Length: 238
Image (cartoon, rainbow, N blue to C red):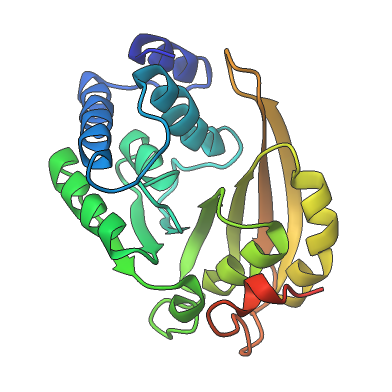
């Protein structure tokens, strides 16, 4: 998917990018490739792959969730900024917080934000488990997102504690989302969430399956969650 096709496909979904926004995606791509030579950010460096499998794929969450409203988003384990930075470029009014466990990636994100001239973005070097225990951040976000981070039972424990009551948790998944959801039902319930919807679609051109799982936060998360770093992954809530 080249930049022109990218803009055309988004237009079909009601997202019209300005020249400035297209320029920001171009700068994003160039910066990603340049930094990828120093630190491992992505296995994909071909322009068409990045535009399709990173940029377009990240923005696909906006096909099922309304980002036009004012909201503060927390992106857990965003790595090179996916999905929240492409979404921020499309919807500049959003406030975005990214938490990632690798300091080098946070360094990249700070540089990227300055290159893209983004405002209302904050990057934290922390484990999601510790971040979710911090009173400053816990249950303070309207929308919490994660893409390709962990299976649903684990991801729910990392993300739901950060979602404010009546807020939304969006998990961006591949074709295995339904099976993961079945196994995570109990965890989602315990953590105060309720599955709202699971949207499946295929990426254009490549036709690989994607799922956008939307979970509503109905109740406060019990204080014991998230458990200490590493525990959610080793002993998922059953």
